[in-house]
Length: 118
Image (cartoon, rainbow, N blue to C red; front, side):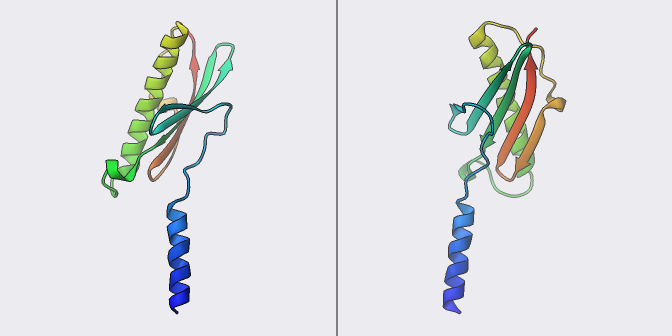
């Protein structure tokens, strides 16, 4: 019985250490310690994909966690889009936050949207 308990404990521990999903696009750039992004350039703009990971020590786990992660993910998305606009010297059309595709799991969020040049 002790062996089974030990094995289950190790499996649970390893599952808890699993890495968050990765961004499946070209080169991944680091925006900050919690945020990565990738861009795919297109003629009229770029597809921006952002991955945001909320660390356990930052927010109390429980009710509202997924909503908090989603809000911060959208905020990071907008910040990165604006930073890329500034870096290229080209203006972007306003990003409609309602149209950003969001996939959120516990403390990880993946956001994607086509940002268009003005």
